[in-house]
Length: 619
Ligand SMILES: [Zn+2]
Image (tube, rainbow, N blue to C red; front, side, top):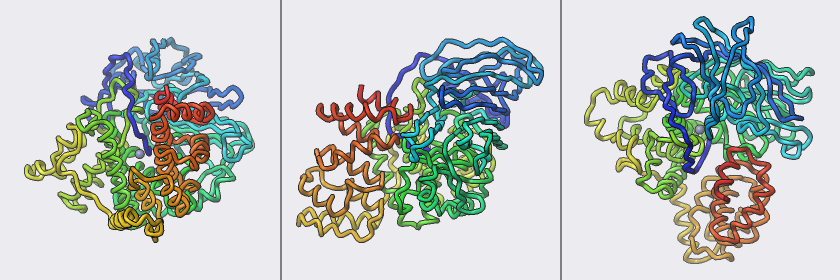
């Protein structure tokens, strides 16, 4: 996923510490997942047959989840995670013998454990259920909230622990299963999942899906809407609403090249097709790496292909994350740190070193801002995290992404790219379709890369990187020639005050972002007016530029940008942009009132992932 920014310490009342098991490996001891009620070492799911109906009138999903299971410990019960689900009945086997079940007390964030009575020979558990109207994973959009304005739309966001709000499941990243699904939707709409997908609507509105590779529950995904498909090449393509499809397929024209570039680095893409679905603007993230079908925000459609690094990021997850998965949310850096590293390698291969370097510098600035924000001694700045008493979604930050990236870059600098690539290629292959803890990764690193070289081990400062807060002293220096040029232009402009001295010839997104970030704190309104006239930041169609400029505009009370800020906050639901803007607004009392007024109108357009964060900010 790309990308979340800040932490709220939400304390919840629970003390469960269950073990999860991966039957593919022997290393089951260290995989306790505090965010799941399931007890997979006793009875574990292996395959799901899902048969559901999506009803836009009642805004409910209902149907049957049939789980093939293995009763490893000859247990008398199997435990599933649920949250706000109505369970009608549960049967066992193909002959559907009704069995008894109980729903445990509701625990904040985690929901309710569903305990189903089974016997030694139980192979199949059929759960008949309905979601609730406010299922946190699901966002129901009315036609007005879509790009086309004619049809309703639905999408899900299951990461981190929201799959349990629309499917009863063992909701832990350490547990994998294959799935088939049959989804019934209104006839004029198309349904898509994280699976082999249809490319056109059918008259009946009934769609069948197959995911033959075992995936964890957080990668379960569904989207339903007036959606069209346009191929890019033989194995990549774009889905979007009809009014967006042309722009989207232009923007993502390099997808095929990216898949090939990725394969050249870490070996074959193992999922078959790679398609992207462009969602309506309320999607809370930049992208979500749902297997075979990345869900993406329309805010990356800048018109000039300048924000496609997001696609490189989600594609990279096909290796780091989807193929080799963090075993618990405390190991989340294994998903995101590796993905940011791989993303920049793909960018370097497709768009060149300069581009990758600029992203690295901007990422390092984000990391430093986060370290500043949390405090360098904060335990939340360790790579191996402890989110056990919190919602893992809110506990995610730049630490997993950018500190994780810096750690891999440090290894690359020490051992050379060739050796690191050989190690990572082997790591992805030998752990394919498995979930891994930080400690298992470190054991692999010791065995296959460090190989007993004590000097190398000391140089890498592994324990500091993983288990200590802040940034170790061997963290690599980063720089970009392009940015050094911008620095010198800014310093001339500071002396002369002439906007014409900011004569940036190649106005790429990264260069402009860097410029906005490095404008002086004491910039005057007249200087901002002149810069805005020259660069058109207020009216930019580029969401990254808008977010950076609007943050400065709020801080400096640059009122000409206010109407655009209001429109941006009302139209866009991507939390990465919303959080810093609202945070900046609430620094003054008049700003806080302004924020509340906008939020009142905007909140219905946000997914729960976003409005939960903003509710917390504005309360
Ligand atoms: Zn990601």
